[in-house]
Length: 219
Image 1 (cartoon, one colour):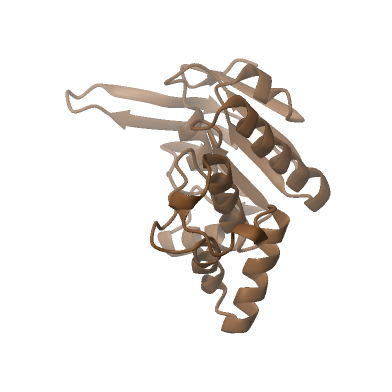
Image 2 (image 1 turned 45 degrees about the horizontal axis):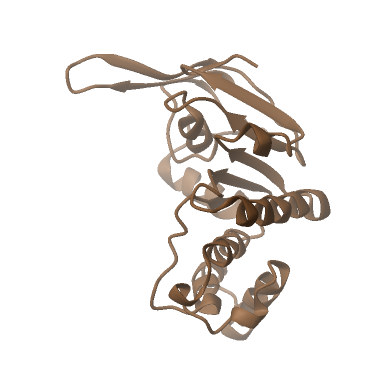
């Protein structure tokens, strides 16, 4: 990202700089944590990195591919091929089982159904939930639901996972479990993790830390 700026116009006409002149380079395989007070631009930066928001100015390059000027179709294909998302709210489909929730994402690969089931099962095995494959979200703990969400995020074999406060709804013990899982995905699978967190302690698990204030990188 080079000289990245994202502005919003308030209904009263005021222009708000959510991000201002952000320049940062992230190497493959890093575990990056983004911290800062509420309203500092953390989620805006994350979503702009992932092609969900367009910058007002500046440039974003992913492995040499320009994202800041890409059309919607190109951005959609970029997200499909490279990005997995893990959010604070799990967004599981309540009437689908654990396995079916993961298969919804796997089905986008357009592989044969038998292959889809194999991929979904392997992802559940990776996050330690094969014994909960036939359970519905209401039958899972919050930590287990977030593990399902992580398995779903891995369905397209992403090179990058973008996580927005992934433990915001979890207690400290369950939070530690999720952080451990993300760290293992980073170290053992080589997946780049970029995680927004409000917790200074959680930020310490990263290899690189970005601290924002009022849309600026201050550390």
